[in-house]
Length: 405
Image (cartoon, rainbow, N blue to C red; front, side):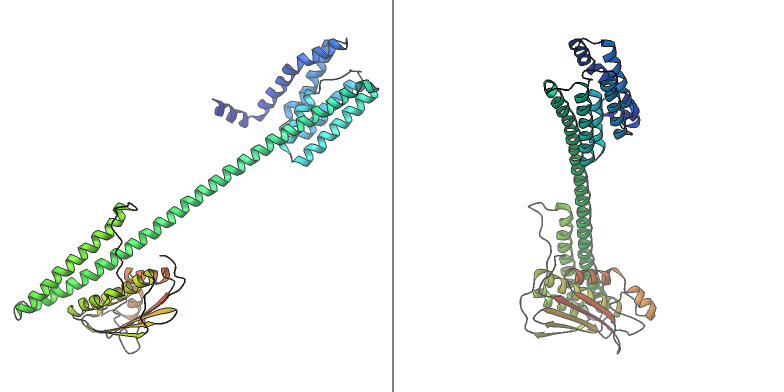
């Protein structure tokens, strides 16, 4: 009910001003009657003068300073022309309150000081003498109280408005930050799922082809290929279960741990590709040392994705992995001898595509994922065909100041 009334008054401010003017007449009338009775003057004249002084208040919201001037003019006329011993200052006080509410502090106090000085000067001329000093001081105090009250209410409203704006801004910032975190987490999970699925499905497909080819001519090797398919499938299911568990359990204490393979498992990864038909060589230079977790995981995933694309698009070719351990960075190079120019192994393009098609295909999820991983680790990744044929992935990951991905 109160909120509805406020909305109604805000939509029609003149009605609120009219209500204030009427209330001022009603509430100040007893004081006017008492003053007239005390000074033995006409009650009708006093109440009529009060009503006349309250008339300008109907415009207090639109022209507060002008309303002060109008009410002050009525009071001065009553004192100087009609010889009122002490007109009711309520209309002037309400007008000064409105000025303090609608303007700045300096303007409000200036207007209040001018109004108080004019009233005291007029009263001193009309009724000189020290016996009326208390009336003059009471008038000044009343004007000051009106200005101080309006200024306090205005300041409080400004503080509340500022606090509400800060709260809304903080809420928007919090929601934007939460959305950003959700998006980053979704992309991270998508990268993990892509790397796990693409890698293992590619190996299963290659090993299944080997088993099919050897089933009649060499059943023993075909049986070994089937065993590798079984092991690869089991590993893929385990990693998928853990990765999907991150989405299901979120931050629960019993949530499964995030899969975080690293270069310690690199030999096993390369063996799985060798079994699928890749001729792989590994070279390490520099002084291998313990890597930050994000760098370790990123290096593993980049090598995994690069070799997966090589096996998927270039077939059983030769490939080389080079790890260069530096003081401040880890450099990774993965090269293959697949079809050049017309077919890029790591570009997610078939071996029969043209150069333009290969470059367009290099924006696939695998290549995007590698770029995102390198960027999240604070590094860079460059991919493209080799001049002598094949494809090359080069990444440089810093070992200091790594950001969390």
